Structure formats: structure tokens, C-alpha cells
Length: 339
View (cartoon, rainbow, N blue to C red):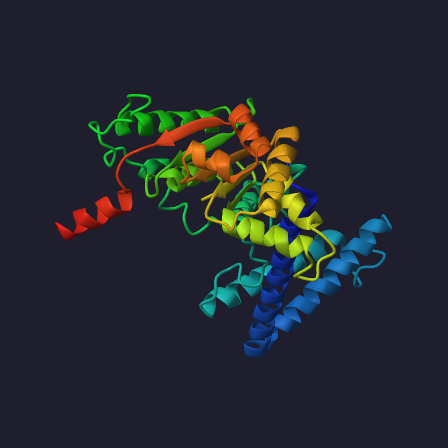
């Protein structure tokens, strides 16, 4: 997955800030040592002077021309080494680490540049993941809501769907398998998911499971509750935030690798919402960007709530996954009360 120019620039600005911070911290440490031990300033001045003389002599291809009287380049180098050793001894004798007056890096491998040669450092990949978590609106949830924490124990093997004849456990197991498959095939197959069923059955939890896996593989994921999503579109469209239009919002909504629209049907539904929903679904299908929609509405109610073309888009382009059973949140509360 390729990150956007904006995301790349955000990460590189962080590296630049880190480099400036490293330099400032070194300056502070140097001032501290100079203040406590004036000899360090004398040594650094001598090292700088000798290094300049050595470099000038090498450039002139004359090992003695610009060196102090009677001093060769080899003697200058030895002198510099002696001064450096004295610094190290003074530092350690005062209880400081040997590298106290050297630059310290957050990442030693790339020295806080983000690159090792022409290749992105491992810390750059982690920076992408961290940024994607922040931009996803999901950072606080995904440590506790992921595939490793999803349990089928809350789904009954007795309660059945009247239409399909499948038990709650079978429908949940199928949905879980589909979500795993969705992640596994994400880079090779364009798919969309539509999770529906009563409240508290794990639809949002499953969407978070998918989100975590995709973010960890450096795909851009954006989560919105339906209410928040259409409120943002209204702000941008009707100028309630002083914006010229929804172009910046569209960049995220239309182009992110994976969009989650949660609790569709809880927003104030009107012709504006229906038109914006169709716009989002249609644009993302045309751009082959995957979307997951979850709703507590039945398919019949959903079709009645939104326009025919919205329902047509979803029914023809989404894998429909129904969950049935008893509210898991209530089950957990009852289990907690029972000890």
C-alpha cells in the first residue's frame, strides 16, 4: 500500500523535529559539561583546530604545509586521538557515560532519518502504522477488540434463523470466517462487507478486528459512525465550518483503503443523507476501495429507509452477513453479576 503525499510529509516532519530535538539535547548536555568542567571546552577547541589543520594539509596534498610547526598529519591525528581519550576519561571519571557528548538517536539504525541508504527503515514502517492508527479514529479500541479477543461462546447453538435455518453460532462462525478471508484477500480481491442484525451482536467488534489487521499491514483505515460521517458532510457541504466544500473530506472518505460506516440507520435519515451515502458507495466502488457497513436494521427496513439505488448498490456489490442471537453486552453483565 502506498501512503499519500500528505501522510509521507507528516511522517518526515516528525523525523525533522526529532533531529532538531536530538541536536538541542546535545547542545544542552555540552553546555552542562562546559559549565561544570571548563577543560572540556579547551579540549573541544583544540580538537577543532587540529582537525581543521589536518584537513587543510590533506587538501593541499602537503602533510606539513598548514600544520603547526614541525607537526605532521600523523602527529595531528595522534594528538586528536589523545584529546578524545582525555575527554572520555574525564566523562567517565565524573560518572557520565562515554557517549554523553555524542548525538543520541531514537532509532540508531537510521539515525532518525527514516532511511537506511535508499530503503525505508523499520522505524518508518512503524511510523506509518502509528499514523494510520491515529487517523483511523480507532486507536483506543483496537487493543481490546481484535480477532484474538473475539469469542464465539456468546452465540447460541440452539437459537435459529427462521429463514436460513442456521443457528446463531453457525451464522457468527460464518461471519468470522468471511472477515478472516476478507483480510487475507484484501490486496488481491476487491470486496465489501455488509453486517446486519440486532444490536449487541458483535458487528462493530468484527469491523474493529478487520481494521486492526489492515492497519498493521499499513493499509489506511477510516472509521465513522453514520451519525458523525453525515454530520461532517453536512458541515462541509453547507459551509457550517467555513470550508469551501467537501474536497478535503472526500480525500479521506473516497480514497482510504478501507472505510467503516458503523450503525447506519441511527442518523437522521433524509434525502441529503441518502444522496451522500450513494455518492460514497458509488465513488468507492468505482475506485475499487473496500467498505464495511454495519446496521441494526433488517434488510426490508433498510431498503425502505434508503433509496432504491442505494440498496441496489449494496445488494449487488457487498457480501451480506447476518448475525442473530442475544445481546452480548447484556450477557456479559449478567455473567459479571453472577460472579
